[in-house]
Image (tube, rainbow, N blue to C red; front, top):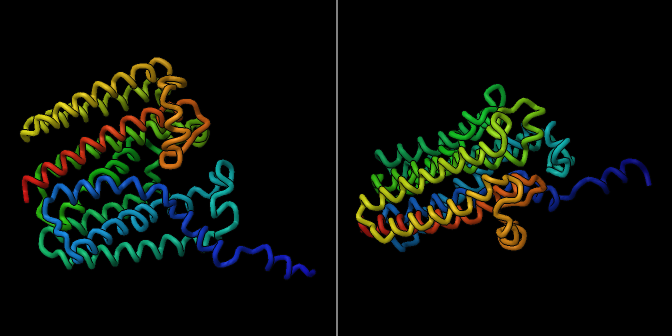
Length: 337
Protein backbone atom coordinates (compact mmCIF):
# COMPACT_ATOMS: atom_id res chain seq x y z
CA UNK A 1 0.00 0.00 0.00
CA UNK A 2 1.55 3.34 -1.05
CA UNK A 3 1.54 6.66 0.80
CA UNK A 4 -1.27 8.11 -1.33
CA UNK A 5 -3.53 5.16 -0.48
CA UNK A 6 -2.76 5.53 3.22
CA UNK A 7 -3.59 9.24 3.11
CA UNK A 8 -6.84 8.64 1.27
CA UNK A 9 -7.96 5.94 3.67
CA UNK A 10 -7.15 8.03 6.74
CA UNK A 11 -8.86 11.22 5.50
CA UNK A 12 -12.40 11.73 6.82
CA UNK A 13 -15.28 10.80 4.52
CA UNK A 14 -18.19 13.06 3.59
CA UNK A 15 -20.33 11.90 6.53
CA UNK A 16 -17.54 12.51 9.04
CA UNK A 17 -16.79 15.89 7.45
CA UNK A 18 -20.43 16.98 7.79
CA UNK A 19 -20.49 15.83 11.42
CA UNK A 20 -17.33 17.83 12.11
CA UNK A 21 -18.85 20.98 10.56
CA UNK A 22 -21.98 20.57 12.69
CA UNK A 23 -19.82 20.01 15.77
CA UNK A 24 -17.99 23.26 14.98
CA UNK A 25 -21.35 25.04 15.30
CA UNK A 26 -21.71 23.46 18.80
CA UNK A 27 -25.39 22.34 18.77
CA UNK A 28 -25.60 22.11 22.58
CA UNK A 29 -25.28 25.91 22.80
CA UNK A 30 -28.24 26.52 20.49
CA UNK A 31 -30.63 25.55 23.28
CA UNK A 32 -29.57 28.54 25.39
CA UNK A 33 -31.45 31.06 23.23
CA UNK A 34 -34.66 29.07 22.83
CA UNK A 35 -36.33 29.96 26.19
CA UNK A 36 -35.97 33.71 25.52
CA UNK A 37 -37.28 33.32 21.99
CA UNK A 38 -40.27 31.33 23.27
CA UNK A 39 -40.90 33.90 26.00
CA UNK A 40 -40.80 36.78 23.52
CA UNK A 41 -43.30 35.05 21.23
CA UNK A 42 -45.63 34.20 24.12
CA UNK A 43 -45.42 37.73 25.50
CA UNK A 44 -46.44 39.24 22.17
CA UNK A 45 -49.82 37.54 22.45
CA UNK A 46 -50.10 37.82 18.68
CA UNK A 47 -48.92 34.52 17.18
CA UNK A 48 -51.76 32.68 15.44
CA UNK A 49 -52.06 28.89 14.90
CA UNK A 50 -51.51 29.23 11.16
CA UNK A 51 -48.95 27.72 8.80
CA UNK A 52 -47.59 31.23 8.15
CA UNK A 53 -46.90 31.93 11.83
CA UNK A 54 -45.48 28.46 12.48
CA UNK A 55 -43.07 29.00 9.59
CA UNK A 56 -42.03 32.37 11.05
CA UNK A 57 -41.44 30.69 14.42
CA UNK A 58 -39.35 27.96 12.80
CA UNK A 59 -37.21 30.50 10.95
CA UNK A 60 -36.76 32.50 14.17
CA UNK A 61 -35.41 29.47 16.02
CA UNK A 62 -33.13 28.52 13.11
CA UNK A 63 -31.89 32.10 12.84
CA UNK A 64 -30.90 32.45 16.49
CA UNK A 65 -29.97 28.81 17.14
CA UNK A 66 -27.99 26.99 14.41
CA UNK A 67 -27.14 30.19 12.52
CA UNK A 68 -26.66 32.99 15.06
CA UNK A 69 -25.32 30.99 18.00
CA UNK A 70 -23.60 28.55 15.64
CA UNK A 71 -21.80 31.44 13.93
CA UNK A 72 -20.39 32.75 17.22
CA UNK A 73 -19.25 29.25 18.27
CA UNK A 74 -17.58 28.59 14.92
CA UNK A 75 -15.75 31.94 15.03
CA UNK A 76 -14.69 31.21 18.61
CA UNK A 77 -13.17 27.84 17.65
CA UNK A 78 -11.34 29.39 14.70
CA UNK A 79 -9.67 32.14 16.73
CA UNK A 80 -9.05 29.87 19.75
CA UNK A 81 -7.18 27.25 17.73
CA UNK A 82 -3.88 27.52 19.61
CA UNK A 83 -5.63 27.38 22.98
CA UNK A 84 -7.75 24.40 21.89
CA UNK A 85 -4.66 22.52 20.76
CA UNK A 86 -3.68 22.45 24.44
CA UNK A 87 -7.05 22.30 26.22
CA UNK A 88 -9.45 20.63 23.75
CA UNK A 89 -7.38 18.80 21.10
CA UNK A 90 -10.41 16.71 20.04
CA UNK A 91 -12.29 19.75 18.70
CA UNK A 92 -12.82 19.73 14.89
CA UNK A 93 -9.98 22.10 13.94
CA UNK A 94 -7.12 21.02 16.26
CA UNK A 95 -7.97 17.35 15.63
CA UNK A 96 -7.51 17.91 11.89
CA UNK A 97 -11.04 16.88 10.94
CA UNK A 98 -11.55 20.41 9.57
CA UNK A 99 -8.82 22.65 8.17
CA UNK A 100 -8.55 26.34 9.09
CA UNK A 101 -9.72 27.27 5.59
CA UNK A 102 -12.76 24.99 5.92
CA UNK A 103 -13.52 26.58 9.29
CA UNK A 104 -13.61 30.03 7.67
CA UNK A 105 -16.00 28.68 5.03
CA UNK A 106 -18.10 27.22 7.84
CA UNK A 107 -18.78 30.48 9.67
CA UNK A 108 -18.84 32.55 6.47
CA UNK A 109 -21.64 30.42 4.96
CA UNK A 110 -23.56 30.46 8.25
CA UNK A 111 -23.14 34.25 8.42
CA UNK A 112 -24.51 34.74 4.89
CA UNK A 113 -27.46 32.45 5.68
CA UNK A 114 -28.20 34.36 8.90
CA UNK A 115 -28.05 37.73 7.16
CA UNK A 116 -30.23 36.52 4.29
CA UNK A 117 -32.99 35.14 6.53
CA UNK A 118 -32.80 38.17 8.85
CA UNK A 119 -33.16 40.64 5.98
CA UNK A 120 -35.98 38.61 4.42
CA UNK A 121 -37.90 38.46 7.71
CA UNK A 122 -37.32 42.18 8.36
CA UNK A 123 -38.73 43.07 4.94
CA UNK A 124 -41.65 40.69 5.49
CA UNK A 125 -42.48 42.29 8.85
CA UNK A 126 -41.88 45.81 7.58
CA UNK A 127 -42.02 49.15 9.34
CA UNK A 128 -40.60 49.82 12.78
CA UNK A 129 -40.91 46.17 13.82
CA UNK A 130 -38.84 45.06 10.84
CA UNK A 131 -36.18 47.62 11.71
CA UNK A 132 -36.04 46.42 15.34
CA UNK A 133 -35.77 42.81 14.19
CA UNK A 134 -32.96 43.62 11.77
CA UNK A 135 -30.98 45.72 14.26
CA UNK A 136 -31.25 42.99 16.90
CA UNK A 137 -29.89 40.30 14.58
CA UNK A 138 -27.08 42.50 13.24
CA UNK A 139 -26.10 43.37 16.81
CA UNK A 140 -25.95 39.69 17.75
CA UNK A 141 -23.78 38.78 14.75
CA UNK A 142 -21.38 41.68 15.30
CA UNK A 143 -20.99 40.87 19.00
CA UNK A 144 -20.60 37.17 18.14
CA UNK A 145 -17.61 38.06 15.97
CA UNK A 146 -16.04 40.69 18.25
CA UNK A 147 -16.35 38.34 21.23
CA UNK A 148 -13.61 36.06 19.87
CA UNK A 149 -11.83 37.90 17.05
CA UNK A 150 -8.77 40.07 17.56
CA UNK A 151 -8.01 42.88 18.10
CA UNK A 152 -11.20 43.36 20.13
CA UNK A 153 -11.56 39.84 21.60
CA UNK A 154 -14.18 40.91 24.13
CA UNK A 155 -13.89 37.57 25.93
CA UNK A 156 -10.50 38.62 27.33
CA UNK A 157 -12.15 41.01 29.78
CA UNK A 158 -15.18 40.07 31.88
CA UNK A 159 -16.35 43.69 31.94
CA UNK A 160 -16.78 43.52 28.16
CA UNK A 161 -17.61 39.85 27.63
CA UNK A 162 -20.41 39.59 30.20
CA UNK A 163 -22.51 42.48 28.78
CA UNK A 164 -21.90 41.13 25.24
CA UNK A 165 -23.29 37.73 26.27
CA UNK A 166 -26.17 39.38 28.14
CA UNK A 167 -27.18 41.37 25.07
CA UNK A 168 -26.77 38.45 22.63
CA UNK A 169 -28.45 35.69 24.63
CA UNK A 170 -30.85 37.51 26.95
CA UNK A 171 -31.89 40.85 25.46
CA UNK A 172 -32.10 40.87 21.65
CA UNK A 173 -33.64 37.39 21.61
CA UNK A 174 -36.68 38.62 23.56
CA UNK A 175 -37.07 41.76 21.45
CA UNK A 176 -36.67 39.91 18.13
CA UNK A 177 -39.25 37.28 19.04
CA UNK A 178 -41.70 39.95 20.18
CA UNK A 179 -41.11 42.15 17.10
CA UNK A 180 -41.67 39.21 14.77
CA UNK A 181 -45.35 39.03 15.75
CA UNK A 182 -46.32 42.38 17.28
CA UNK A 183 -45.25 45.80 18.51
CA UNK A 184 -42.86 45.65 21.45
CA UNK A 185 -44.78 45.08 24.67
CA UNK A 186 -43.38 47.15 27.60
CA UNK A 187 -43.57 44.09 29.86
CA UNK A 188 -41.58 42.02 27.37
CA UNK A 189 -38.93 44.73 27.31
CA UNK A 190 -38.60 44.33 31.08
CA UNK A 191 -38.29 40.55 30.73
CA UNK A 192 -35.49 41.18 28.23
CA UNK A 193 -33.70 43.39 30.79
CA UNK A 194 -34.05 40.73 33.49
CA UNK A 195 -32.63 38.08 31.15
CA UNK A 196 -29.75 40.41 30.25
CA UNK A 197 -28.63 40.54 33.88
CA UNK A 198 -29.30 36.83 34.47
CA UNK A 199 -27.06 35.97 31.51
CA UNK A 200 -24.33 38.22 32.93
CA UNK A 201 -24.40 36.43 36.28
CA UNK A 202 -24.24 32.98 34.67
CA UNK A 203 -21.33 33.83 32.34
CA UNK A 204 -19.42 35.21 35.32
CA UNK A 205 -19.64 31.83 37.05
CA UNK A 206 -19.11 29.81 33.88
CA UNK A 207 -15.54 31.16 33.75
CA UNK A 208 -14.62 28.87 36.65
CA UNK A 209 -14.01 26.08 34.14
CA UNK A 210 -11.14 27.99 32.51
CA UNK A 211 -9.71 29.84 35.52
CA UNK A 212 -6.24 28.28 35.21
CA UNK A 213 -5.99 28.90 31.47
CA UNK A 214 -7.37 32.43 31.83
CA UNK A 215 -4.76 33.30 34.44
CA UNK A 216 -1.92 31.95 32.30
CA UNK A 217 -3.12 33.67 29.11
CA UNK A 218 -3.86 37.03 30.73
CA UNK A 219 -7.64 36.92 30.37
CA UNK A 220 -9.36 39.05 33.00
CA UNK A 221 -12.20 36.86 34.20
CA UNK A 222 -13.75 37.81 37.52
CA UNK A 223 -12.55 34.62 39.17
CA UNK A 224 -8.96 35.51 38.19
CA UNK A 225 -9.39 39.06 39.52
CA UNK A 226 -11.15 38.42 42.84
CA UNK A 227 -11.15 34.65 43.46
CA UNK A 228 -13.91 32.05 43.52
CA UNK A 229 -15.76 33.08 46.69
CA UNK A 230 -16.20 36.71 45.66
CA UNK A 231 -17.09 35.65 42.13
CA UNK A 232 -19.92 33.56 43.54
CA UNK A 233 -20.95 36.44 45.82
CA UNK A 234 -21.06 38.92 42.92
CA UNK A 235 -23.08 36.57 40.73
CA UNK A 236 -25.46 35.67 43.57
CA UNK A 237 -26.14 39.36 44.33
CA UNK A 238 -27.01 39.99 40.67
CA UNK A 239 -29.28 36.93 40.54
CA UNK A 240 -31.08 37.83 43.77
CA UNK A 241 -31.63 41.40 42.56
CA UNK A 242 -33.04 40.00 39.30
CA UNK A 243 -35.55 37.86 41.23
CA UNK A 244 -36.42 40.75 43.55
CA UNK A 245 -36.92 43.11 40.60
CA UNK A 246 -38.97 40.43 38.83
CA UNK A 247 -41.23 40.09 41.88
CA UNK A 248 -41.74 43.87 42.01
CA UNK A 249 -42.63 43.98 38.32
CA UNK A 250 -45.09 41.10 38.72
CA UNK A 251 -46.76 43.00 41.57
CA UNK A 252 -46.90 46.16 39.42
CA UNK A 253 -48.44 44.23 36.54
CA UNK A 254 -51.10 42.83 38.85
CA UNK A 255 -49.82 39.24 38.77
CA UNK A 256 -50.05 38.54 42.51
CA UNK A 257 -49.73 34.74 42.30
CA UNK A 258 -46.68 35.08 40.06
CA UNK A 259 -45.14 37.51 42.54
CA UNK A 260 -45.53 34.91 45.30
CA UNK A 261 -43.96 32.24 43.07
CA UNK A 262 -40.97 34.49 42.33
CA UNK A 263 -40.41 35.33 46.01
CA UNK A 264 -40.56 31.62 46.89
CA UNK A 265 -38.00 30.95 44.13
CA UNK A 266 -35.75 33.67 45.53
CA UNK A 267 -35.88 32.04 48.97
CA UNK A 268 -34.99 28.62 47.53
CA UNK A 269 -32.10 30.17 45.59
CA UNK A 270 -30.69 31.86 48.71
CA UNK A 271 -30.84 28.59 50.64
CA UNK A 272 -28.74 26.96 47.91
CA UNK A 273 -26.38 29.93 47.57
CA UNK A 274 -25.35 30.02 51.24
CA UNK A 275 -23.52 26.64 51.36
CA UNK A 276 -21.86 27.34 47.97
CA UNK A 277 -20.57 30.70 49.21
CA UNK A 278 -19.30 29.09 52.40
CA UNK A 279 -17.56 26.31 50.46
CA UNK A 280 -17.17 27.11 46.73
CA UNK A 281 -15.87 23.60 46.03
CA UNK A 282 -18.36 21.26 47.71
CA UNK A 283 -21.38 23.46 48.53
CA UNK A 284 -24.83 22.15 47.54
CA UNK A 285 -23.35 18.70 46.88
CA UNK A 286 -26.85 17.19 47.29
CA UNK A 287 -27.53 18.42 43.72
CA UNK A 288 -24.59 16.57 42.16
CA UNK A 289 -26.78 13.64 41.13
CA UNK A 290 -28.93 15.98 39.05
CA UNK A 291 -25.83 17.23 37.24
CA UNK A 292 -24.37 13.76 36.66
CA UNK A 293 -27.53 11.89 35.74
CA UNK A 294 -30.23 14.40 34.87
CA UNK A 295 -28.93 17.58 33.26
CA UNK A 296 -25.30 16.75 32.55
CA UNK A 297 -25.78 16.42 28.80
CA UNK A 298 -27.52 19.80 28.61
CA UNK A 299 -25.40 21.96 30.93
CA UNK A 300 -22.12 20.04 30.75
CA UNK A 301 -19.84 18.45 33.30
CA UNK A 302 -16.60 19.64 34.83
CA UNK A 303 -13.56 18.45 36.75
CA UNK A 304 -13.09 21.93 38.27
CA UNK A 305 -14.73 21.87 41.71
CA UNK A 306 -15.95 25.49 41.64
CA UNK A 307 -17.41 25.06 38.17
CA UNK A 308 -19.15 21.89 39.32
CA UNK A 309 -20.67 23.87 42.20
CA UNK A 310 -21.90 26.42 39.66
CA UNK A 311 -23.51 23.63 37.61
CA UNK A 312 -25.27 22.34 40.72
CA UNK A 313 -26.65 25.81 41.42
CA UNK A 314 -27.52 26.35 37.76
CA UNK A 315 -29.85 23.34 37.72
CA UNK A 316 -32.02 24.88 40.44
CA UNK A 317 -31.72 28.53 39.41
CA UNK A 318 -32.44 28.00 35.73
CA UNK A 319 -35.47 25.79 36.33
CA UNK A 320 -36.95 28.32 38.77
CA UNK A 321 -36.25 31.29 36.51
CA UNK A 322 -37.57 29.55 33.39
CA UNK A 323 -40.83 28.55 35.09
CA UNK A 324 -41.42 32.08 36.35
CA UNK A 325 -40.57 33.79 33.09
CA UNK A 326 -42.78 31.43 31.06
CA UNK A 327 -45.69 32.08 33.43
CA UNK A 328 -45.02 35.82 33.14
CA UNK A 329 -44.82 35.66 29.34
CA UNK A 330 -48.07 33.68 29.16
CA UNK A 331 -49.88 36.18 31.41
CA UNK A 332 -48.53 39.12 29.41
CA UNK A 333 -49.57 37.48 26.14
CA UNK A 334 -53.07 36.82 27.43
CA UNK A 335 -53.34 40.50 28.36
CA UNK A 336 -52.72 41.55 24.74
CA UNK A 337 -54.86 38.90 23.02
